[in-house]
Length: 327
Image 1 (tube, helix red, strand yellow):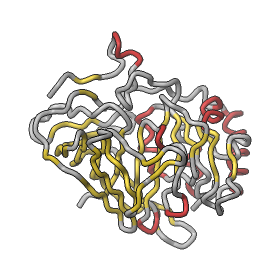
Image 2 (tube, one colour):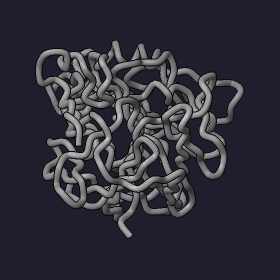
Image 3 (cartoon, rainbow, N blue to C red):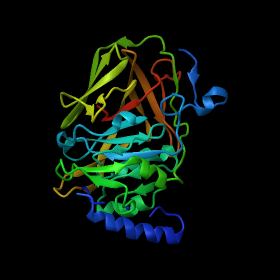
Image 4 (cartoon, rainbow, N blue to C red):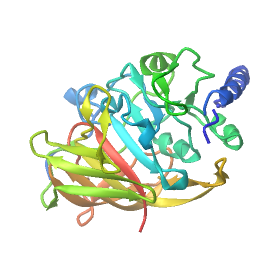
């Protein structure tokens, strides 16, 4: 389904986008909570990580996550990492960058319909991807996203000759961020950061399972981070060691069939991120039962303690969100 998209603004821009994006089809094969931006020292804090720098623009990148694509490049720089189910029960990554834009991110793969809904909470972010199914193209072009496939950003991608297609296309992320100078700046999407709340259960390891993939998060007391493994092997980022977010969210969502299929006939799952449900938040070596709520696509996602309804703070640093089907 890697077939690389109009953005639904002025007519001349939309026409240009249609031409460029169709060209791209040939390319793809308990403590105080930091609300971030509430005044004082928080004005510069990231609403995505709770750390001081927030960045200028939101850049999302679809990243391959099969064995042939590993180790990936640039993921350790992401503010947020989402994993979602795709065709054949595999998983794919949507990485969101703002505070730290690396030189290179990849391998880059194709977009999905549910990416539009997920990214609406960021306003009008940029989305870099390698392609999209032809029938989905009009929907993606009409979305408020700033689309950056290879046909739109011709000097923004490069192939790695040491890897086989389609697992060898990489984004020049800083070039992409400059090209997306009208993309939204980071804004509050519902997260809060602060000291760990009371309660929770001690846990050394938690595993997320997709039909044909799994992710395991192991607490490292030395690093005070969750070490990530994919399908039983350490998940590494080229040149930067094992991926290690500060907070992991296992978010239980509705995953249903979409209108689309890939070339082999497998249906493309649609992951619903508007609504509400249960979640498990991992931080500081503990697991906290939580409830998530996102009433509308244009709004953010809040996480509250399952029992008391108070906002559940995340640890400051990268947040990893595994979107998994409700049981």
